[in-house]
Image 1 (tube, helix red, strand yellow):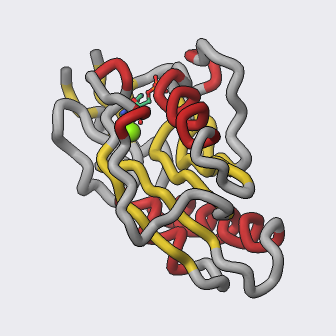
Image 2 (cartoon, helix red, strand yellow):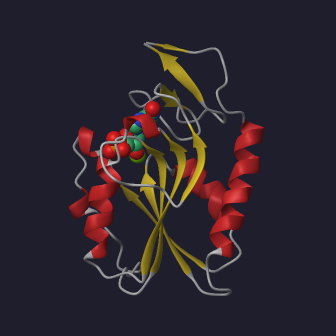
Length: 171
Ligand code: IMP
Ligand code: MG
């Protein structure tokens, strides 16, 4: 594997698009009502930090570890902090990338049991050609081709999360 020398999505384009997505989230939320943002770690850390700063409503934030199902993650055992009640909450799940969709579908099914008022899903990236389950994000910043993308929170074997832009690794 080798890091591509090219940029897939620039820092400037990310900034612009995140601002648009924040506006769309706000437009779909009753004015002044709180939003419970559940950010999935580690991949969503940068996207979430940028997104919540653009949101006008009071935000309750939980950053919880959830590796993909493929990497052994168990959505049904997600550790929600006590100060983040799910029942009746207006939940926004924030994730780095929607790939097969297995992880988020399992998480959504689990969270539904906790009876939130609603669940919306915001992803930075969407790789629709890889989808294995019926899941469409409410908000997606960018669609990406079937490549292993890294940067802006996304990793390859733990590396490259710090890049401020998105690129890919060559097989
Ligand atoms: P899914 O369950 O197949 O949708 O897996 C989604 C998770 O796999 C994401 O949250 C990422 O952690 C990881 N993932 C999938 N594709 C990529 C990629 O291209 N780059 C980095 N991580 C990825
Ligand atoms: Mg992830």
